[in-house]
Length: 201
Image 1 (tube, rainbow, N blue to C red):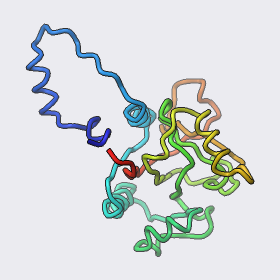
Image 2: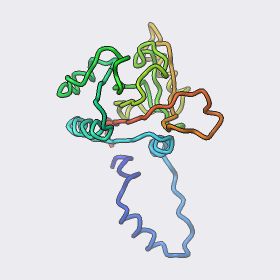
Image 3: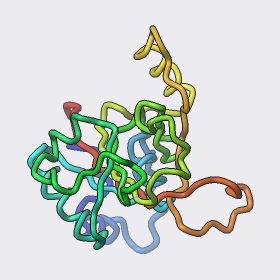
Image 4: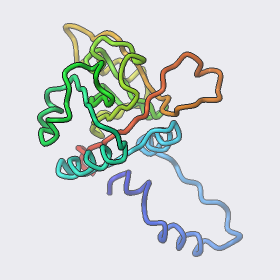
């Protein structure tokens, strides 16, 4: 069973289990996996998380996201692979990122300890995060999950042995307003994550 099915399992099943334990039974201790930790923290950070099991699902999910955004979509992407994946929506793509209001991209890794997404210049086109559209749609796979920034950096060094990309950024601020003064000066984005299951259960 996918770990996301475990996270977002049947509410009825949860309720039934609670009844079976009884009103005065001690609280059940559940060990949270790294994968579950990512999903929970990503949502807590303000991200919108959409899990899918097939590439067919991805197309409908993309349509739903565009409808939810509810604006005249002008999409920029650094990835020709994503242009081909969403070829049905070719008319929505623009080459000039400055004219876009949505940024569609992949990522380097997903950091499970922070619910964060790790980008590099491969995705950000040498631009600063603040100069990119406010709305991000990120496509990733479950195999891109790593524990933390250290593991992500090791992965990047192994993947790009000849030339390590610049502009490596871990983004985890997906809320429009932040009360925590520690986030002062950071750049928030409205973040949609389309996550494809590509690992065997």
